[in-house]
Image (cartoon, rainbow, N blue to C red; front, side, top):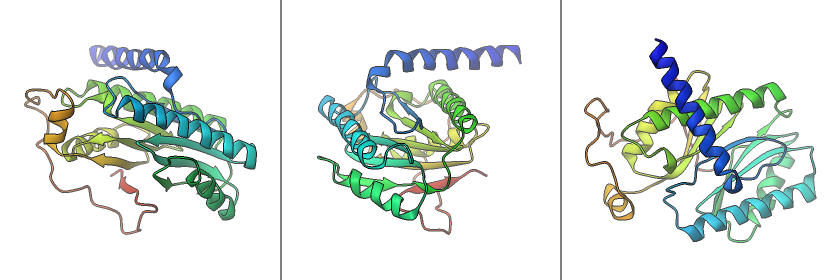
Length: 237
């Protein structure tokens, strides 16, 4: 038991240290939403990474100029697809935020998962920070995944995963995150690539650990309620 606790603590510290080193490349936010972005060994091109940072900066500035601090919006861009999370006071504000971000130069598409409700509290955001750390640590611990291939965003206990991953990697990461204590739901905003594309673009482990689950070819079932803006949600069981 003591050895397991020490291992988890070491993983959390290691990931926290990496996040601090990479803070200059961390996604920007409006209103203090929790965002986790690990860019080492990123599968995007360098140009795409720089462009995503520019999109986040321009979108953040545009929202600040037009809506000020009355909305709590988290802006995360991956390969020019922008994920919006957080809270806004009205449905009109929700649509206005999406319109403003969609008008930013080089934005390819917008996934709008903003909630119409009061802004999250400081304690909720602190808890989200803790959950993000645990999710990253668990991804680092997985021997059959590249943890740096994933962007992790947490909002009110909902964990959003972004990245260019294979179907196996998407399903495996979802399985891992669903097992993290405190996670209410997993929302996947992935770009699915083939195993061949992955082999061409990066080095992959020669052999997955024997105790790792077999690749799953079918996507995770979607709840009856249709997700918005193309978001595929995976509820925690």
